[in-house]
Length: 194
Image (cartoon, rainbow, N blue to C red; front, side, top):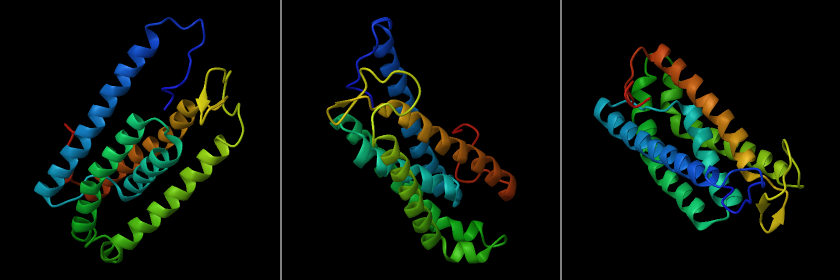
C-alpha cells in the first residue's frame, strides 16, 4: 500500500526505491516462513502458527487484500499470502486435535469451528478499523499530503497497514512464545524459521 503516494519534497529520491526493496525482502521472508512452517508442520505432525495469530493474520490479508489494496501488485501479493495460508490452516486443523489432546480435548475436537469463529471476528475487527481509518481524510499522524486512496488525497494506507499489522504481529509473536512454553516443543516451526 502506498505505491501511489507522492513523497514530500524534503525526502531524498533514493528513499522510496530503497523502501520498496526492503518491503520486497520482507515479503519474501514472510513467504519463506509460511512455506517452511507448512513443511515443518507436515514433518512434525504439529501446527506452527498459534490459532489466534493465524486467524488475525489471515483476516488481515483478507481485508487488506480485498478492501484496502488498490494496485494489482498489492492485491496479487495478498492473494499469494492467502494461498500460502492454506497450508498453515490445513496443518492447524489436521494436527491441532493431537496437540490439544492433553491440555484441552474440547479445543482439539472443535478446532475448525474455533478457527472459523476467530477468523470471522478478525475480519470484522480489521474491517472496522480500516473503515474507520478511511472514512475521512487526515486520520493518523502528520501531514497526509500526497497520500492517495481511491483517487482521493489525504488517506494514508501505509500508516493504516503499519498500525494494524503491528498489532497483528504483536499478537502473533506473544502467542508464539506462549505456545512454545505451553506445548514444550517447537513442532510445526523451529528457531531457524523464527
